[in-house]
Image (cartoon, rainbow, N blue to C red; front, side):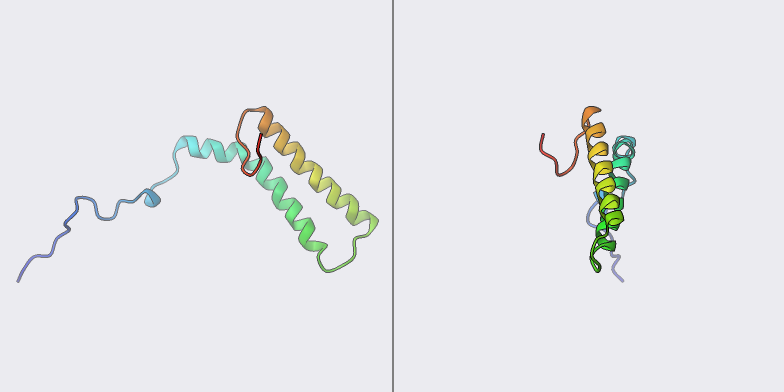
Length: 87
């Protein structure tokens, strides 16, 4: 019987199979407030899809938008790059 072996030295190692580096984790941690604010804005927008907005809903939406803008401003002032925002 013939032995079947791997032709390449590393068969299973791939860039997608590795853990995030410390720098990548730091970048994610620095962008977390913006991510949370954007998710909150998305939640508000989704909740207002099937009904007309009342005065309270308008305030809720405006507050969520301000949180996103504040988080983007703080992230930009720290010198980090904000995805989707051209400086």
